Image 1 (spheres, rainbow, N blue to C red):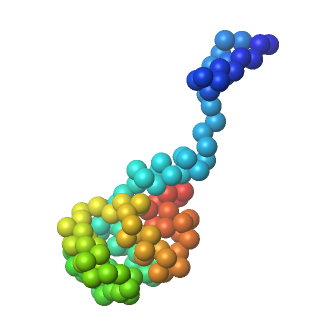
Image 2 (cartoon, rainbow, N blue to C red):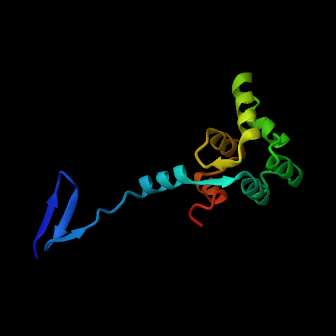
Image 3 (cartoon, helix red, strand yellow):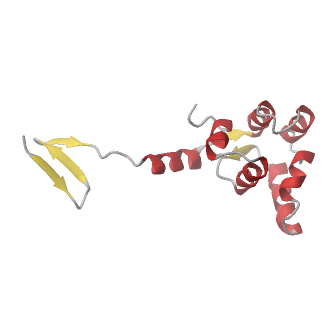
Length: 124
């Protein structure tokens, strides 16, 4: 058996059979997070299911209105930045896992990365 590793391409072969490199789990997860988004209605339903948004706020949020529950999340931000988040929310039809607002919501709610991933169906 002959094993050859090409440092230039970072590929290995055994007896001329290609051995695919093992992907880095952290890079794989980061890529999955970056590629994941949900329709706003589904995201709001998931927030309601996780008891992050009460039903009335989830309904309003799914319609593009800024939910009262989110006010505390942006309360300490500069006025222009808080307004930008509200404007973005109003116009969004999909919510990206890696949008900065999601990180703010997670921090405010005390959610772990794994819990946020679960809201987006990552790792399910």
